[in-house]
Image (tube, rainbow, N blue to C red; front, side, top):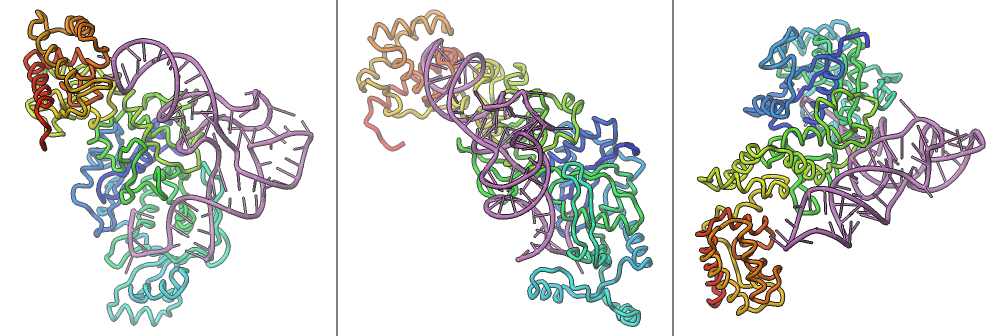
Length: 495
RNA sequence: GCCCCCAUCGUCUAGAGGACCAGGACGUGGCCCUUUCAAGGCUAAGACAGGAGUUCGAAUCUCCUUGGGGGCACCA
């Protein structure tokens, strides 16, 4: 490559980062790191109407959380700044006017109403170029009247434009199908097209890696580069991420669910709040549209940066494999240390409203559920009962297969008695005592343990029983067993 | 409607003319382990959208069809 590698991630401050944008940022980052280039963060805030307060902070925070650092941009500076477009409007105006002077652009006074009726009547052929053919006198008069205007690009009327996409090859369009796009809006701000081209040029961007949804603008931008007499950066369009079920792009507006009923998340902060780890998310995102090779699914961001290249990017868009993220997050969770796991549990439980969590208890619980959770939601489901005052038990869940209420009652009473007299309330002694109790009662271990599990946890699926008892302690264990026995003896009333 | 992009198991993908009766992973089924559920181990089912070419030979190249997707703002 003849230019040093300089790539950018250029989000608009319109809210939280979309997971697809995060993937784009990641690929740019990997590309920069692989070639020892620079990764630049630029904020494209040319639409005042869509600006959302706090977005910039959210973008910065999100990228940092993912572990993506930028060499130039907000908060870190750089020689090509400012990196926020609203601080560069003078530059855009200057170059828009330059195009007007070169007769490659013109002032357009058409009202929004006229444009609206145009698009309603025609079959979406774009602007009819009315003002392109205004005479010098027309312009002078409208200027004198102080009519507001926009600046439009004079698109060539004939011929074709070809853009070479690194992962798709040549993309060619008829110029007659291109419209005279707006460069400067009536409010004095540039449009995305102008600002993007001007900035990429002056920031000496070498490669543009962006989403597939931008393909149609590539030939348009190529025309702009040509009109300016600038070299266009090398461009590559990444495949889009589609909604898993349903149709269309993965979007905040289309909510869908995985087959096991988990909600498909869309915004970066949603993943974070749900307990997905940044390293898992990075690994996961890297595998959409690109693959590590060697049949490896699990790898670090450093490893992928080492071998990242554009040639192995898959041009086809695909659905968002949310289930696979769950599995991957579980894989990463299992690698966590006890301390990390404890803090993971704490965050999950506190987020669900549990308070005053005992640190030592968490330390005992963590290893027990480490292989059983994929996200915060799972932690609450698997470990919440430890901290409940009362556990939900009904006769229906309590009475096991081939057992009667009387048998169940007897089992509970006998267990209470056994446990009250147990010298050591520990996993091993508990198991020994209860196994012999099952035998003495003529019950299968499956039956007795099933009763106890429900009585102690309120659920049929739970962490290992004896460990659970040991953690709960003798007092709580007995209390819950007795409470369960109460629900059996009493006729069922509404709870 | 117009323009553009894409097409391998249900899903994410490997595959750059012979190494492919197509490999991995998630998911699913089964077995083992087992007090439930996981984790772990083993195992099974599962795909080159269709049709024409090119070639001795095509998942790989070309064309058409079909299907999917994206875009057609003074939004990015």
